[in-house]
Structures are given as C-alpha cells and as structure tokens.
Image (cartoon, rainbow, N blue to C red; front, side, top):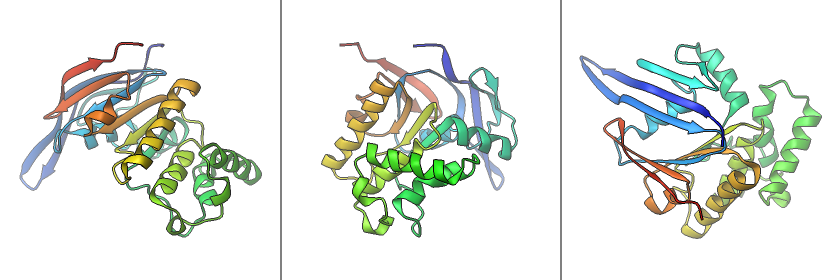
Length: 232
C-alpha cells in the first residue's frame, strides 16, 4: 500500500447560522492511503457528512489543508473541484441519486458526458459496468422499475464510470434490507480486494464498518479513536 492519496490536515469547517457559528469539523486529521479500505464512523452530528464533503471535494475547509495526491485542493474554485471529482472520485449515496427519467444505461453513461467521452465509448463502458454488477437484463429499465438493491447497483456502476481512484460510499446500505445490503457490501469488498480501489465508507453501523481494514471514529468534528483490523 502506497502513500496517502487523500490527506486532511487540521481541517475546520465552520458554518454561520445567523449570528451563531457552528464548527462541524474542529481540526480533523485523516490520511487515506492508496488502495486502502477505511470506514468513518460516528453518531449523528459527529461531522461525518461534512467530512465526506471535504474528502470528496464537494466543499472547501474554513481552515486547514486538503491534499489529493499531494496537491493542495483546499482553495480551488467550484469548477476546478468539479473537474477533480469527475476524474478522481466516485460516489455511492444512501439515496441512490439516480435520474428518474433516464434508464439504468443512461444513468451510468451520464458522468462520462462531462469528461467528453464519445457516445459509443460511453455506451460500451456503461454496458460493461452494468454487466459487472449483474444488471445485464435491466439496462433499459428506469429507476422506478428497479428494486432498491438494483438501484444501488446502478449507482455503483455509475460511480465506476470514469474509473475513479477513490470511491466514497456514504451509508451505502442505509436504504436496503439486510440481505441486499450484504450483497452491496460484498461488492465493495470485491472492488477493494480484486481491483485495488481506495474505498472510504461512512457509516453509523459498527457491523458494516468491520468490513474495512481500518475504522476511524469521529466525534465532535475530530477523530477520537482508530482501530486497525489485523490481517488474516
């Protein structure tokens, strides 16, 4: 496993709510190495969502530095961050976030449009990814015609569309039954083990977190405990 692909150094995020300032992150330090599977745990209000926004280049910190492959991205413009997200990071959300008017195939093709990939290449890659997640027979179905588990598998295929180096899974099984959730988790573990993807999974579920190699416990905007799983 190599050096850190993502590093947060003394990251603060302060929100102004009228005359009141609320610190969601209070000097967060976190290193994620290339090829690592890390779980970030914490109760509601611990700063998990804000941490995801920082790690995933969705927002910039109030103070501190965020390094992606040793490049400081802490103060980039929204358009520059969007370019980085499109190329480097794939997102899997609890709510799936699929476009309801598009088919499964079109949903997976969508991120590739923003990277100027030709349509025939987009279609071929989306087809291959949906086959990979076991949805070869559901490509022309819209989200409303798919089960929750199938929608999440479309979301996983979409997250892989631009061959990202980092996959961020935010409560990826939160809206799924336990059997379907286990299937999604197994797929994430396979992506990590067989394809050496860097995976950062945010969850409040201790059992789910134990699929990762390392668990970072977040409370009041900082890491309060780390647990490294012993290799089998």
